[in-house]
Length: 154
Image 1: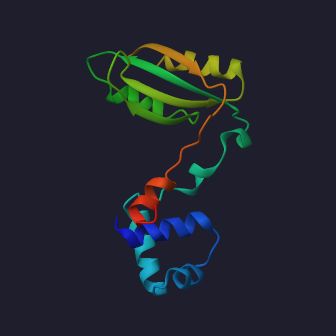
Image 2 (image 1 turned 135 degrees about the horizontal axis):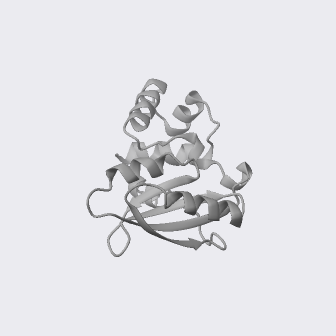
């Protein structure tokens, strides 16, 4: 990613509904240049799917929890694939330390979370889980400051 890519991302962040023509004019570049760069940013995974911007609470999943998962040391790939199949699992990270995976999950209510964590224990190779419920998001994911730094405007 270069400075122009970062400027494009900032412009999209400022006005996600802007047309390609409006963005190109605002940035002082050709529309074809903008479209080619946007396509490259999407294809390379820099710009992720729109659904990442949706608040899970709007989908009836107001509880956010983090589940540490310990796996059997024989293999964990099958367990990871099985855990990915749960729609309530919105992120999975491999970790160091006592747990092997850290899952970010969303649930409708405490009973739904309890059901979900119980189902995790039925996944082959899952040995143990530990759940921490988020009481409140103190700061949502933020990347703008990093993008501004890359664009040279931060």
